[in-house]
Length: 116
Length: 116
Length: 116
Image (cartoon, rainbow over the protein chains, first blue to last red):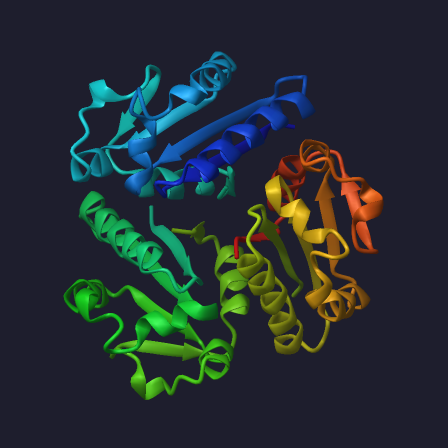
């Protein structure tokens, strides 16, 4: 059995962001056999949370999740709207054309939806 | 392939409301072939956001989404609780008996759930 | 047809908590034939809302939902993080090892996800 989930982060709210990171870390601890496929999708104002300085307190936590093959997908529409150059983001982010499309595609493919 | 999603708006929070409208507009741009079925469900205090004056800044945006066949369903339980007469709402809203029932029915029918 | 849903409460936000309780009560009223299976999952800071004093205003409402076989599951990771002894919680809570795992399991089993 594979644990598939998409974490949706869309508000400029460090609390929700931190909660999502904790959720993912707890999940990894709970299923040590590593059968999982976990994706974070950032859209809306939440993309500002991924600028290198903005998420400095979370660098280590995020790096650990990325080492565990958890994907960080970032909506290009939102980057444009908030005038963020992808180069300003922390490393390891994948820019996707539209976060909303990914959220629907992933749920259709059987990923649970989690909104921290 | 058809993009099916339900946007759940329940807080008296113009930010979440605006974000949901933007999500839907981005989705329409991303899938120009128009194979979609999108529904907004409003329940809880969010129904107050749909009073004509309250959502004046969004009239055009909402009208464009409605022209694109996106449904705006509003919970009758919530309208009663917040003393709103359906006639106070913007045009094009469909009053449904219970938002929560629609949220479950739609997900069972394969609609992705999106909480802006 | 059985109405299956999981209500996810994770923020220390009495508004979201109250909204979830109202959602569940409205659902019970809307489907009087009682074919349902409803679960609340509390994780993150929301677990503090379930301490006996904290949720005093909701005791009756919660008791009515529990009498209607609605489950209240509480994440043990979150209880530890917020230094809450399970004995401080209202009666009728089930402590589970990881809320996030339950959220994924339930959705995989066909429960609709509702984030109040």
